[in-house]
Length: 52
Image (cartoon, rainbow, N blue to C red):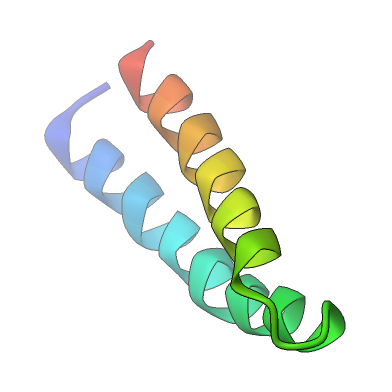
């Protein structure tokens, strides 16, 4: 996987992080812990893809 493809994957995962984080924040009564868990799982998945 070249650098451009890795950068594209990171940008593509940034949109769900921003939008999904806001949705999770609103759905769980303005609590930050579910957002932190969501973001951690999302970025763990992205970095596992990038590590391959």
